Image (cartoon, rainbow, N blue to C red; front, top):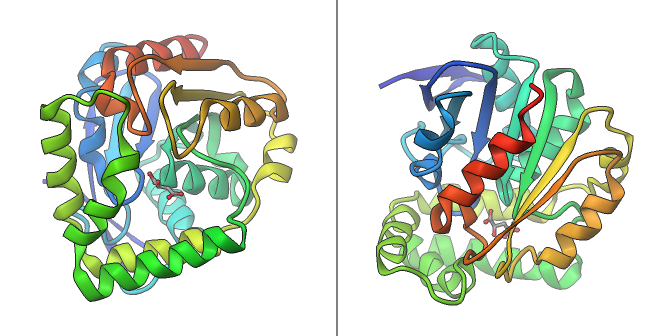
Length: 259
Ligand code: MLT
Protein backbone atom coordinates (compact mmCIF):
# COMPACT_ATOMS: atom_id res chain seq x y z
CA UNK A 1 0.00 0.00 0.00
CA UNK A 2 1.43 3.42 -0.90
CA UNK A 3 2.08 5.84 1.94
CA UNK A 4 3.62 9.32 1.77
CA UNK A 5 5.53 10.58 4.79
CA UNK A 6 4.49 14.22 5.16
CA UNK A 7 4.74 16.62 8.13
CA UNK A 8 5.70 13.81 10.54
CA UNK A 9 2.79 11.54 9.62
CA UNK A 10 2.08 8.85 7.04
CA UNK A 11 -0.75 9.55 4.62
CA UNK A 12 -2.30 6.70 2.67
CA UNK A 13 -2.89 7.45 -1.01
CA UNK A 14 -3.68 5.77 -4.31
CA UNK A 15 -3.09 6.83 -7.93
CA UNK A 16 -4.96 5.65 -11.03
CA UNK A 17 -4.68 6.56 -14.70
CA UNK A 18 -2.63 8.92 -16.79
CA UNK A 19 -3.02 12.53 -17.79
CA UNK A 20 -3.28 15.82 -15.91
CA UNK A 21 -3.38 15.20 -12.16
CA UNK A 22 -6.44 15.69 -9.99
CA UNK A 23 -6.28 15.24 -6.21
CA UNK A 24 -9.64 14.21 -4.71
CA UNK A 25 -10.07 15.13 -1.02
CA UNK A 26 -12.75 13.46 1.10
CA UNK A 27 -15.15 14.99 3.64
CA UNK A 28 -16.12 14.30 7.26
CA UNK A 29 -16.45 11.67 8.84
CA UNK A 30 -15.17 9.82 5.80
CA UNK A 31 -12.13 8.72 3.84
CA UNK A 32 -10.96 8.24 0.28
CA UNK A 33 -13.39 5.38 -0.33
CA UNK A 34 -16.12 7.94 -1.16
CA UNK A 35 -14.37 8.33 -4.57
CA UNK A 36 -14.26 4.57 -5.36
CA UNK A 37 -16.93 4.72 -8.07
CA UNK A 38 -15.77 8.02 -9.61
CA UNK A 39 -12.08 7.17 -10.12
CA UNK A 40 -12.60 4.40 -12.74
CA UNK A 41 -14.79 6.79 -14.75
CA UNK A 42 -12.19 9.59 -15.00
CA UNK A 43 -8.87 7.77 -15.02
CA UNK A 44 -8.83 7.23 -18.81
CA UNK A 45 -8.11 10.97 -19.14
CA UNK A 46 -6.85 12.09 -15.74
CA UNK A 47 -4.35 10.84 -13.19
CA UNK A 48 -6.71 10.57 -10.20
CA UNK A 49 -5.11 10.62 -6.76
CA UNK A 50 -7.12 9.94 -3.61
CA UNK A 51 -5.70 10.28 -0.13
CA UNK A 52 -6.82 9.76 3.46
CA UNK A 53 -6.33 12.97 5.41
CA UNK A 54 -4.28 12.82 8.60
CA UNK A 55 -5.86 10.45 11.13
CA UNK A 56 -8.60 9.26 8.73
CA UNK A 57 -8.99 5.90 6.98
CA UNK A 58 -5.71 4.08 6.40
CA UNK A 59 -3.51 7.08 7.31
CA UNK A 60 -1.67 6.97 10.63
CA UNK A 61 -3.44 8.01 13.85
CA UNK A 62 -2.87 11.68 14.58
CA UNK A 63 -2.97 14.04 17.52
CA UNK A 64 -5.08 17.21 17.32
CA UNK A 65 -4.91 19.19 14.08
CA UNK A 66 -6.25 22.35 12.47
CA UNK A 67 -7.61 23.01 8.97
CA UNK A 68 -4.34 24.80 8.23
CA UNK A 69 -2.39 21.69 9.17
CA UNK A 70 -4.56 19.52 6.88
CA UNK A 71 -3.89 22.01 4.06
CA UNK A 72 -0.14 21.94 4.75
CA UNK A 73 -0.25 18.11 4.71
CA UNK A 74 -1.75 18.36 1.22
CA UNK A 75 0.87 20.95 0.23
CA UNK A 76 3.63 18.62 1.46
CA UNK A 77 2.07 15.68 -0.39
CA UNK A 78 1.79 17.59 -3.68
CA UNK A 79 5.40 18.73 -3.40
CA UNK A 80 6.75 15.30 -2.44
CA UNK A 81 4.89 13.57 -5.27
CA UNK A 82 5.86 16.35 -7.73
CA UNK A 83 2.20 16.89 -8.67
CA UNK A 84 1.91 20.67 -8.29
CA UNK A 85 0.45 22.73 -9.73
CA UNK A 86 -2.57 20.53 -10.30
CA UNK A 87 -6.34 20.33 -9.99
CA UNK A 88 -7.65 20.02 -6.43
CA UNK A 89 -11.17 18.72 -5.85
CA UNK A 90 -12.57 18.70 -2.32
CA UNK A 91 -15.91 17.49 -1.00
CA UNK A 92 -17.38 19.25 2.02
CA UNK A 93 -14.61 19.21 4.67
CA UNK A 94 -12.28 18.36 1.77
CA UNK A 95 -13.54 21.59 0.20
CA UNK A 96 -12.50 23.48 3.35
CA UNK A 97 -9.03 21.91 3.03
CA UNK A 98 -8.89 22.89 -0.67
CA UNK A 99 -9.92 26.48 0.13
CA UNK A 100 -7.46 26.71 3.01
CA UNK A 101 -4.73 25.51 0.62
CA UNK A 102 -5.87 28.11 -1.92
CA UNK A 103 -5.47 30.81 0.70
CA UNK A 104 -2.03 29.59 1.89
CA UNK A 105 -0.45 28.11 -1.25
CA UNK A 106 -2.36 29.12 -4.41
CA UNK A 107 0.84 28.43 -6.37
CA UNK A 108 0.20 24.68 -5.93
CA UNK A 109 -3.22 24.79 -7.62
CA UNK A 110 -4.06 25.10 -11.31
CA UNK A 111 -7.80 24.52 -10.99
CA UNK A 112 -10.19 23.90 -8.11
CA UNK A 113 -13.42 21.92 -7.94
CA UNK A 114 -15.60 22.39 -4.87
CA UNK A 115 -18.17 19.68 -4.25
CA UNK A 116 -21.01 19.93 -1.71
CA UNK A 117 -19.15 22.37 0.52
CA UNK A 118 -19.33 25.84 2.04
CA UNK A 119 -17.07 28.88 2.00
CA UNK A 120 -18.23 30.88 4.98
CA UNK A 121 -17.19 29.96 8.51
CA UNK A 122 -19.61 28.57 11.09
CA UNK A 123 -21.89 30.92 13.03
CA UNK A 124 -22.22 30.59 16.83
CA UNK A 125 -24.90 27.92 16.58
CA UNK A 126 -22.78 25.98 14.07
CA UNK A 127 -19.74 26.22 16.36
CA UNK A 128 -21.79 24.90 19.29
CA UNK A 129 -22.88 21.93 17.17
CA UNK A 130 -19.23 21.18 16.39
CA UNK A 131 -18.47 21.12 20.13
CA UNK A 132 -21.39 18.73 20.70
CA UNK A 133 -20.27 16.43 17.86
CA UNK A 134 -16.67 16.38 19.16
CA UNK A 135 -17.97 15.40 22.61
CA UNK A 136 -20.22 12.73 21.07
CA UNK A 137 -17.25 11.25 19.19
CA UNK A 138 -15.08 11.08 22.30
CA UNK A 139 -17.78 9.85 24.66
CA UNK A 140 -19.76 7.48 22.43
CA UNK A 141 -17.52 6.68 19.46
CA UNK A 142 -17.79 6.77 15.69
CA UNK A 143 -21.03 4.76 15.48
CA UNK A 144 -22.81 7.54 17.40
CA UNK A 145 -21.35 10.14 15.00
CA UNK A 146 -22.45 8.02 12.05
CA UNK A 147 -26.00 7.78 13.48
CA UNK A 148 -26.11 11.55 13.98
CA UNK A 149 -24.78 12.38 10.50
CA UNK A 150 -26.64 9.76 8.47
CA UNK A 151 -30.03 11.52 8.10
CA UNK A 152 -28.43 14.45 6.27
CA UNK A 153 -25.75 12.72 4.23
CA UNK A 154 -27.73 11.28 1.34
CA UNK A 155 -30.52 12.32 -1.01
CA UNK A 156 -34.24 11.62 -0.81
CA UNK A 157 -34.17 7.98 -1.94
CA UNK A 158 -30.76 6.56 -1.07
CA UNK A 159 -29.75 3.17 -2.40
CA UNK A 160 -29.34 0.51 0.33
CA UNK A 161 -25.92 -0.36 -1.11
CA UNK A 162 -24.72 3.24 -0.69
CA UNK A 163 -26.24 3.46 2.82
CA UNK A 164 -24.41 0.29 3.87
CA UNK A 165 -21.06 1.40 2.43
CA UNK A 166 -21.40 4.88 3.92
CA UNK A 167 -22.09 3.43 7.38
CA UNK A 168 -19.07 1.17 7.04
CA UNK A 169 -16.83 4.14 6.15
CA UNK A 170 -18.16 6.39 8.94
CA UNK A 171 -18.07 3.74 11.64
CA UNK A 172 -14.48 2.77 10.84
CA UNK A 173 -13.05 6.23 11.62
CA UNK A 174 -11.09 6.89 14.83
CA UNK A 175 -13.17 8.83 17.40
CA UNK A 176 -10.16 11.06 18.29
CA UNK A 177 -9.75 12.04 14.63
CA UNK A 178 -13.46 12.86 14.36
CA UNK A 179 -13.31 15.04 17.47
CA UNK A 180 -10.24 16.86 16.23
CA UNK A 181 -11.82 17.39 12.79
CA UNK A 182 -14.92 18.92 14.44
CA UNK A 183 -12.75 21.45 16.27
CA UNK A 184 -10.74 22.14 13.08
CA UNK A 185 -14.01 22.78 11.17
CA UNK A 186 -15.36 24.93 14.02
CA UNK A 187 -12.30 27.16 13.86
CA UNK A 188 -11.97 27.42 10.07
CA UNK A 189 -11.77 30.80 8.35
CA UNK A 190 -14.27 32.48 6.08
CA UNK A 191 -12.87 31.56 2.66
CA UNK A 192 -15.00 33.93 0.56
CA UNK A 193 -12.38 36.73 0.47
CA UNK A 194 -9.83 34.17 -0.80
CA UNK A 195 -12.18 32.79 -3.45
CA UNK A 196 -12.84 36.26 -4.84
CA UNK A 197 -9.12 36.76 -5.45
CA UNK A 198 -8.21 33.46 -7.12
CA UNK A 199 -6.91 33.57 -10.68
CA UNK A 200 -7.59 29.92 -11.56
CA UNK A 201 -11.03 28.45 -12.37
CA UNK A 202 -13.21 27.29 -9.48
CA UNK A 203 -15.95 24.89 -10.54
CA UNK A 204 -18.87 23.90 -8.36
CA UNK A 205 -20.53 20.48 -8.14
CA UNK A 206 -23.57 19.98 -5.91
CA UNK A 207 -26.12 17.24 -5.33
CA UNK A 208 -29.58 18.64 -6.08
CA UNK A 209 -30.84 17.14 -2.81
CA UNK A 210 -27.90 18.26 -0.62
CA UNK A 211 -29.30 19.31 2.76
CA UNK A 212 -25.91 20.32 4.28
CA UNK A 213 -24.50 22.47 1.45
CA UNK A 214 -27.62 23.32 -0.53
CA UNK A 215 -27.60 24.13 -4.27
CA UNK A 216 -28.64 27.71 -3.32
CA UNK A 217 -25.62 28.05 -1.02
CA UNK A 218 -23.31 26.70 -3.71
CA UNK A 219 -24.88 28.97 -6.36
CA UNK A 220 -23.87 31.86 -4.05
CA UNK A 221 -20.25 30.60 -4.05
CA UNK A 222 -20.40 30.22 -7.84
CA UNK A 223 -21.44 33.91 -8.13
CA UNK A 224 -18.48 34.98 -5.97
CA UNK A 225 -15.67 33.29 -7.91
CA UNK A 226 -14.05 34.96 -10.88
CA UNK A 227 -14.69 32.14 -13.29
CA UNK A 228 -15.83 28.54 -13.25
CA UNK A 229 -18.85 26.43 -14.06
CA UNK A 230 -21.60 24.99 -11.91
CA UNK A 231 -22.89 21.42 -12.22
CA UNK A 232 -26.02 20.14 -10.45
CA UNK A 233 -26.12 16.41 -9.81
CA UNK A 234 -29.59 14.79 -9.93
CA UNK A 235 -30.64 12.06 -7.51
CA UNK A 236 -27.89 12.90 -5.06
CA UNK A 237 -27.59 14.58 -1.68
CA UNK A 238 -24.43 15.65 0.17
CA UNK A 239 -22.40 12.65 -1.00
CA UNK A 240 -22.86 13.14 -4.73
CA UNK A 241 -19.76 11.04 -5.69
CA UNK A 242 -21.24 8.00 -3.92
CA UNK A 243 -24.83 8.51 -5.02
CA UNK A 244 -24.40 9.50 -8.65
CA UNK A 245 -20.78 8.76 -9.60
CA UNK A 246 -21.56 8.85 -13.35
CA UNK A 247 -22.87 12.42 -13.21
CA UNK A 248 -20.03 13.57 -10.92
CA UNK A 249 -17.40 11.95 -13.18
CA UNK A 250 -18.96 13.58 -16.23
CA UNK A 251 -18.92 16.99 -14.46
CA UNK A 252 -15.25 16.52 -13.47
CA UNK A 253 -14.32 15.56 -17.05
CA UNK A 254 -16.16 18.62 -18.43
CA UNK A 255 -14.65 20.92 -15.79
CA UNK A 256 -11.14 19.73 -16.59
CA UNK A 257 -11.40 19.49 -20.37
CA UNK A 258 -8.91 22.33 -20.88
CA UNK A 259 -6.25 21.02 -18.48
C1 MLT B 1 -18.56 16.89 5.48
O1 MLT B 1 -19.25 16.16 4.75
O2 MLT B 1 -17.33 16.99 5.34
C2 MLT B 1 -19.23 17.65 6.58
O3 MLT B 1 -20.61 17.56 6.43
C3 MLT B 1 -18.77 19.07 6.60
C4 MLT B 1 -19.46 19.90 7.63
O4 MLT B 1 -20.08 19.35 8.55
O5 MLT B 1 -19.35 21.13 7.56
